[in-house]
Structure formats: C-alpha cells, structure tokens
Length: 430
Ligand code: MN
Image (cartoon, rainbow, N blue to C red):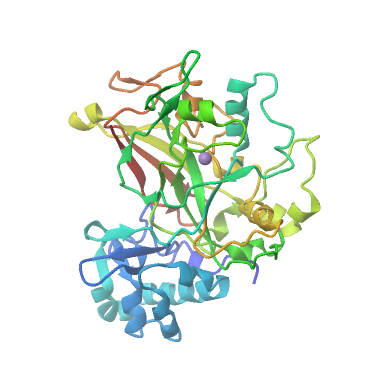
C-alpha cells in the first residue's frame, strides 16, 4: 500500500459514537492522533484524541478491545518512543482498529469507561526527545528575512541545493502551555554589546516532525524510504530572541537565541491521518536547480508535500482583561516549504547520521508569499520597524509580558473531514 493511500478511515461520512466527535474541528474520527496523558489514575500513558475526549489507549489494549493488538500495550507507558519505532504498518493496524472501535455503536458500552474529558487530563511531551533539528525550508521566510539583512541577495546560493538546518536543543523542548520566560543574553549595542533581557522576543511558526524507526550509524536513509521513518506531525513554535540572534549567529549559526525554549503541541498527527492532505512537492521556479539525485524521488515529488492552513493568534493581557478574543495576526500554508519532510530526513542522514525514534525536526518558519501570511513578528513588523496595531489599539513589534501566543494548523480538502493539530500556546512572562 502506498504511503499516501486513502481508505475507509478517511470517509467523510463515517459516524463516531463519541458525543461531539463528528465535525469536531480538530479531532474527528478521521484524525486519531496519539499522545501521552495522565488523569490521576497511574502514570503517563498513551491516549488518542477523539472529539473532546482522550481515549485511554493503554486501557483499551489491556481490556482486549483492539483484537490482535494486545502486544502493543507494553509500548504505551511513560513515553511513546518505542511505539513510534514500530513503524507504519503497526500504526496503520492501530488506526484501523481504533476506527472500527469508535464507529461501532455496539462497542460503546464497553469502551466508554476508557474515555476521559480532554479538559481534565494532563498532557505530557509524547516522547523523550533525544535530538532536535531545526530546518529552514520555508522559502518565503528565508527570502523575507534574508532581504532584511541582504536586500540585494536575500537567498544564499546554497538554499536551493541544501535543506538548510542546524542541530537544536532537545532539553528545552516543552509542551503547549509552558510559560515563556524572557531570556537574558548579549544584545548588540554601540561599540560593545550590553547584557540583559531580550527586547525582540519572537515566535516561529513551524511544523514539527516526529521520527519513527531510526537508522544505524553510517547507514543513510534513501529518499524513497524516508517516509518509513516519519511517525507524525505536530505544531512547533521555535521561540527566538532576534537581538541575541543578530549578534551571535555568525559564523556558526543560532545558539542562545533559540535554545531557551521550543514549544510543541501534544498530539502526534500520523502520516495516515494526513494522507488526504498530501500533494506535490514545492513547484520549483523555472531556472531553479533540480534536487540532487539523493533528494529526488518521483513519489516524493508527486505526494510528499503537506497541505495545512496555518495561523498565528495573539491575545495580550489587556485583551484578556477586557474579555476580548485572541486576534489572528497572520498565517500561510505549509505548501510554502521548499523541501519535503522526506527530503529533510534523507538529507539529515546522508552523511551517516543516525536518527532515533522520538527525535524531532522543525521544518523552519513557514510564511507565505503574500502579506498576511507571515510566520514570525520579524516579518510582520519588517524587522521591528512597523508596529502592528491590534483591534483594541495596542501596538506590538515583538512580544510583551502577558502576551498569549497560539499557532494553529488545519487540514482541509473538499470531500474530506477537516482535521486540526490542537493547541500550541505560550504566554510570555518577564
Ligand atoms: Mn526555527
């Protein structure tokens, strides 16, 4: 079966017996993302989001409600690294069994005890993140940011050959809701830097990629096989201190400007759930080089892209105090990624680097080509020169204490159920 195959689990007419699941904006039965939760009874364990509930996956496996999959129960405690390592075939079997359980009314009575209201559970990072890598594949972001620094030469010549990236910091990857403490650092001053809290705290709207089965040291993953190593997707906010970044980034790239925190959404949206929302890789402009052979695969070019509608939402403290809703600042589409996630993974390993289950990638900030599609404040405010005016009259260049920033991703396609990625939120504290 092809890795972008659509089957009965994507049927828009499927009906789920869980109250409120049908038509749920994030988690209808066509999504079934995996996460790690606890509800006061026992430690963190695997769950599946369905409507406004979490289905205790460990519990239904133990109770024998997913026939033939009982052996998966041992992979559902404390962390999901081992479950992700099992790969696509197991993941598809699990999806099909969950779909059958949740659409069969006769299973309702025995299954309902394993449903917990989403609002009363604690979510955990789904995996122990061994390594985190951040790419730079949003080409319009790269061009806009490049043009702020190099108006005549926004894209460096390697961009269309190399999926640019750097090794990030795994220990500071946190879950949605974790407060964002304004970092201290060296800030560019006159002749010498000064030291203090960043004055240019920014977000980066990215898609996160969870690695499934790893590869052995010295054994690259081919572009044709790269999809087998991807276990799913989430939202990822790569918080950035732009003043620190500007001073420190040459010659070796980002360091303290990025390593203070990276926020992810709790749910792993599987490649199977994303099957209807795949499409061609980025359409390269006339004159752009073709990907080198190790990054070129016909299936990846035809089906390797992701189609997600993205959003950046801000609620300041003053807005919250006045009961004003969050305001949508901007948002584009993941189709602005110049490289597919499979190309990122193949490139990451081509020199022999070994990936491990539970490793995390960020795609790089995703901005569209148009005004209003920016994935960072750096772009929205032209490097801090043009403040945003919010509906209540407040202005912003970069984030202030009390600002609650949310990023969102939704997959929509005519004839299919819309699925969403859930929350990826951080509130700034000084
Ligand atoms: Mn980034």
